[in-house]
Image (cartoon, rainbow, N blue to C red; front, top):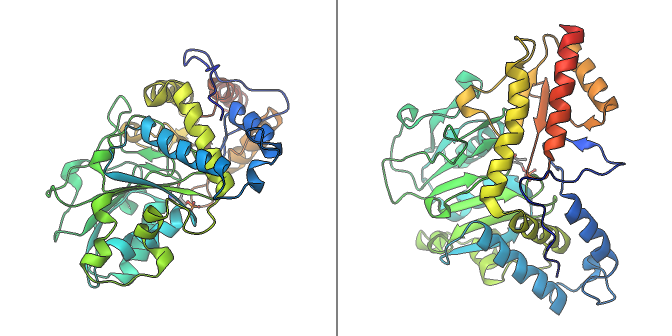
Amino acid sequence: MTTFAAAVKPSVDLPHSAGRNFNFSAGPGVLPEEVLRQAQADTWNIGNSGIGIMEQSHRGKIFDKVLAEAEADCRKIANIPSNYKILFLTGGATTQNEMVPKNLLPDGGTAAFLTTGYWAEKTWEECKSHFPSSYEAWDGRTIKHAYCPADNELKWGTKPSYVHMCSNNTIYGTQFRNADGSWRYPSMPWNDVPLVCDMSSDIYSRPMDVSKFGLVYAGAQKNVGVAGTTLVIIREDLLDAHKKFGRKLFTMEAYATHAKGESRHNTPPSFPIYLSGLVFKWILAQGGLEAMHKRNEAKAKVIYDAIDGSKGFYKGHARPDSRSAMNILFKCPSAELDDKFLAEALKAGMDQLKGHRSTGGVRASVYNAMPRAGCEALASFMGEFARKNG
Ligand SMILES: *Cc1c(COP(=O)(O)O)cnc(C)c1O
């Protein structure tokens, strides 16, 4: 449908129009203006059909095309090999805490976890309660999730059916990364154990090698769309894992059902899928993952420089080598100053900067669609605020 042919060059900043605040929300997050405008038009009448996208039959020609293009563009962005299926499911990333073990873990089986943050804790705790022989190869609680572990810090036990990790810890602001921000893949002592990754808050923010993973999932509402669909990328041989160890799943619990039904065994979340499709086209038009990565690293640096240049006024949470390019956490010298910071930032047009209830402080989420101008506005506000209150 749309191609976003008039692509913004990565060297030129994203638009930020009057009437909109800079939205630093951790999720649902900021969307590209071009995507919102296209969605406005298609909500009324998509593809000259005389019917809006939300009113289209999920088995009609218009939606056929939306779904096929979303899938193809999603595959193209990350060069996803043909032996991986792309699924658009419901229930959020959280429902994957149930689907992954149900599909991949035999009764009494073992999965291993890298617990690097709030969401990874939830994933581990839920699995442990049903599969008690599972274990943590890394427990980041002891270091308050301030960094992601190096390979030599991982404590492996029995060979697991899969290893679970989370690439970017939305709530603590850490990320598995090399110094240049590229993907740092943890190494495992086995080469036939599938790596399962929760990429909810950094998928498609930087180049990735899908072949390193057995299964990747991401709630769309952070970097690739709106709440309502969860992207799952699964290696084909895992679709029938549950059959191999003899578990009988309910229809909707099985990845195989959704793969066979091309994500529409039942009525799919058609608008969220459509919206992700627009975001995929937008990412391609921006120059793909290399361009996203370059821009994201530069954007994050603007804010980290403001923390580092504040003579200790702002304290970051993440250890510098694990600093997330997506979610940036810092605290003012007191909780009162945090509150004042948030109130004054909002007056200056910067919204949703409050840290998660479990960490407090300030959190700036600067996903793909956050313009660099937003990061610069925040950094200059931080400088001024520190001067006045330091
Ligand atoms: C937001 C988030 C989740 C939870 O996603 P839901 O779609 O709300 O279930 C899980 N993992 C990570 C890393 C997240 O950022």
